[in-house]
Amino acid sequence: MAELNEIFTAETLLQLFPPGRADDFFDALLGDATEGAYDISLKFNGYQPDEKKLYFDLHLSQRPGKCLACNLTYGLPEVFARHPIINIKGLVAEINKLLDGKLICKDWSLKHTKSISSALHLIPLVIQVE
Image (cartoon, rainbow, N blue to C red; front, top):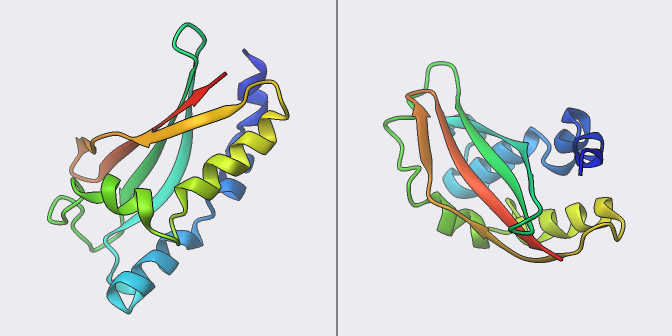
C-alpha cells in the first residue's frame, strides 16, 4: 500500500509523537527533562501485506553532551509499553484513526532495542492489522 507513505509523512509522525514527549518522559522519570540522554522520534518502516503488519521505529537519538551508550536502553520496550507519557496504546489508536478503515489495528508489540550506533538506538513497534 504505497498510500501509507502518504499517510505517515514526517510531519504526521511528528504530530503522532511530538518532540516534547521525551522531555515530559524524563521530567516524570528523573524529575528534570535536561537529565535525559536521548530524544525520541517515530519513523515509519513500511507494511508487510503477507504478514499483515505495520512497522514503525522509536528512534532514541543521543542528546548533545550526553551518552546514549551509557544508558540502559535495553529494558525500555517494557517501560515504554506501559508508561502513560509514552502512551503506545494511544499512539496505536491514533494510527488506527489515520488508517481510516483501510486497515484496522488489532494488536501491537514493542520489540527488543537495537543498537545502530553509540548515538542511535531503535525500538521497533510492530502493529498487527486486518
